[in-house]
Image (cartoon, rainbow, N blue to C red):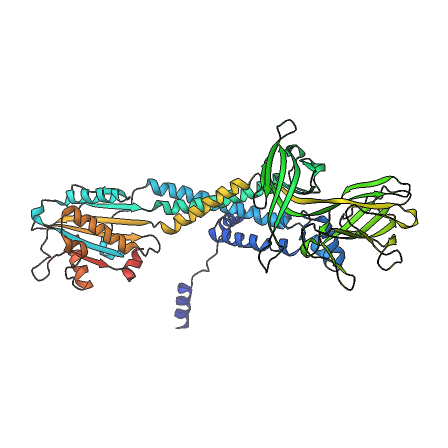
Length: 591
């Protein structure tokens, strides 16, 4: 007995399945399939957005190297670690570039196979007519009276012409047979919109990459009367692209002739606020080109030499003359005052490395309209130049500029300098009005306040991919809208002649994916067919009493399987009706 059991176990036991190894080529094919899936592309797109977040959290070296250096000094515990992770150069880092390239490859791998498949689908014929149209989500029948003289072949031809006019691609089958039918398709633009959307995303990526590689940006402060020439030495700050070449700079020039500001003098809450900025400039496309008078305003940039020049800031520049201890002019001209508070309260730093026998420096503030409180504190009461005042402290010593170390022109390190004038010294501070001068203590020289000019700050941007990025972005939106609002639909129509001479017409509709307007399309097609064959309002609206769904299916199957047979009796006439099976188990099987 036990031997028989063992034999049965041996016979019933099956060897364990051994999975074949993929091998190197199989692994590469699997990896490529995963990379080029739409799920991976969406994940990489989200990952790219997350990877860009550190660029807004930490200072970026391309934008301002000095701030990055100071940030590392202020955070010695983790500043160097962040630098090693390239978090100060996020957009040119290895990990950000890797995500960018993978997304680029993934999108290309998604688009090309889908484009090929869609091209083949557009050239192929519509699918064959289903055996039972009643299983489709939208289904209906029409009956053409015998006295209308419209046989099944003519009815199928009429239906084909009507569907063609409605934008369907039609294929008629077995036109001269007993039960001719047709298949029709429309909505290929839906997939075209999808392909345009994804292709445009690739175009946006390429355009942004081109801007990062070959573009550049820079800043320059222009005082009234100054001229900016588009050369490397003409910029106060310059940020080149990865593959930037100095030959890309077209030597155009911009001269600031006059800058005007309009201040609010009417409203109570915003009295004195600037409401309009206008810079009158003279431009030249190249040294030999004629000069052009133009106006530069906020949000209205100039376009010169493939660059855009934006107005981004403004302020006052006191004009001073500084003489050294030997009586020689060590510095003369406007000094840019940096805005610090309301009503154009501005800080002023003046460095005079050419003063002899010792270098001089001044630090203080400029007030367009000076007021003094009872405690002796000065403040600016209005942004206009009503009562301009220049208040300074003076220093002498080594400014540290001879060593070649870069310094911020708006900051003065006084640790190694000796003060000459200050509020806490007997000599007090220097207070100057336009046209006045002051002699420094200990024969160190003098300073005079000659007047005030205005200045503007301009940003110069050159991005060769900017226009293309805009075009591709608009195409992406158009493709997305098309893919959302165009529906892919299929229609089948079958006709047959009943034994009493009537022509029975069946039609069914199927959508690819969700289509909440499919019922409306079915009603529209029904109306077109009814109007073509003059079947009357009852056939168009389907107002005739329709039996139960079971009876409908039975009658439809009778009409489909045996047009001309005796399935239709007096108790169950083959009248026309409309049926919707959307959501049923049968319709889900066919979909």
